[in-house]
Image (cartoon, rainbow, N blue to C red; front, top):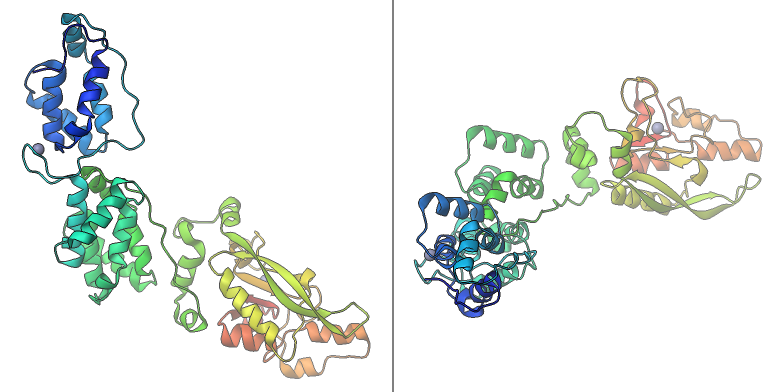
Length: 423
Ligand SMILES: [Zn+2]
Ligand SMILES: [Zn+2]
């Protein structure tokens, strides 16, 4: 059997019109039967095992049917066949962004198509049940139209109400991850690694990301003819209660994001972790006046704690004492070495340390007690302003930022620095 007749103008074009016609596509040939068909169509013969395995394994690795079609169409064997029929071979077809895939059971052998099998598998493995027709059709449609990727669809299953209602322990959650996304049971080392990460404060969104954004899941998706995509993990929303319970490691993991565990942060990496927030502050009208006015201050800080800092400074602004912050002497991010230990980076390099009024506050290097603060001289406007800019134990800054928002205060440090707070 072959597709060619003497007198046709172009062999490849004729083959393409036939093999990618609606009628032919409706045969929903599986990879095996598709390649077997190409042998007959292009070479006028039965397949050989070596060739069949070669082309099927390419398809299983994500090569599109159009590319495999071109492999056959531009072969010497097909050129010779065209020559016999006295027709031109033609040129390879353009490969589309997404290749053609079967959309139902193979009409030759009955094998389920990849997308349907992928979705069915997610139901079976994640939800421990068969798909309902409506659900199956919905997810299949999104995959076929490439409106969603394999990673997207998987996230909908894992973070669905139905899955969450299983109320899995961390250990069980990891076991499901292995089965669902690596198509195997866990290995002890791997499971221990993830258990340790969770113990260390990694949330399930990040665990899931570790599985779906992996080579192993990519291979699984290719096998099913699914576009992998990537999943962006979601951090937990920081609240004072949540932050109070975070371990040091969990804080470090959060603020370093994708650079966690990768050694010393470079300036470029640090820059990429920053964002800018604007917060309302009270300040003096000018250097000759004790009248307070609302100003706004911008802070370049770590993007993972930016919302939290914003919330803290908005609350500080609401404090009845109207604590003053001089916008020109208020900053978080500054990529530099630690003043006391130059071999390590200052926490300002991570955008998680904040200095308040360092240029206005005469007592920045000493821990300021309430008694010391009370005893500060205050004759002139300048002296009174300095006193108000000064942070001391029990001051509104201390009460809100340290007491309520659990930012560390360096007033208690071995080398005290009363205007420095950090996440
Ligand atoms: Zn088949
Ligand atoms: Zn500082």
